[in-house]
Image 1 (cartoon, rainbow, N blue to C red):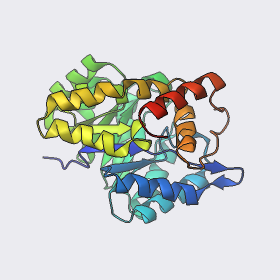
Image 2 (cartoon, rainbow, N blue to C red):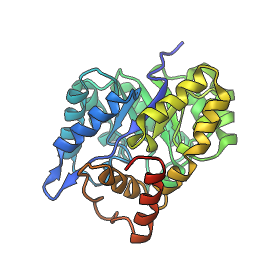
Image 3 (cartoon, rainbow, N blue to C red):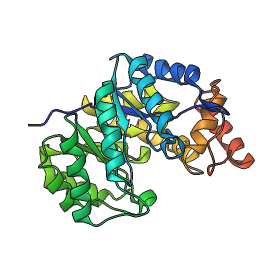
Length: 294
């Protein structure tokens, strides 16, 4: 049986920028906040971390900093995906060398590929590293969907151990669970589907919500695993308004504003992402006050 990387809440952590690059002081503060509030993993340089608008050097510096700052206090999973297989291989090797616990690898985007191409792409990466790999399926962003049948084929590879499933298609998640069984751990990639995916045997969530509510999100998963299903479901439903606010505009535009409201200096998203609209700033402030976050 494959070893589970983490069970519970993994935070898809945002990256603070200044005009000169990554603000590592503020990044370190948020990492400490996450660990102090019991997150089970930190995912660095993912979608929420704005890896798409970071230079190769910035990604490597951020990976290195995060691993050193966490210092084994929780798991560190590094986003190393690319639509260039060779680039994904090289960054995955770097993450392994620096001490990452696992890597998160999004499907190729823009140039896309076929299902056979996905198998070849992930096989190349898996052959290049020994650390665990989590597939990342987010077709709304990439234009590519990893089908359940492809998941089953990829789950035969020893170090492909999980999938972040952000298709939003709960029927697809059920089929992945049915086909792959214990060979592929499933993590919700959508904060409004944490409990539904846990009910299908999922191991947890890779969360945007937990940037601002790490303890709550961790606790929600723990309640579920401890058999307090009704309580966990109630917790899921009670934060749907905040989840809605965090996705009013393209992630991570809203969450960076939310972190700024909480006293962090996370600056603005990098172009082509822009600052949250005034209307949605007001909405975010109302919801954050309701949940006693500001």
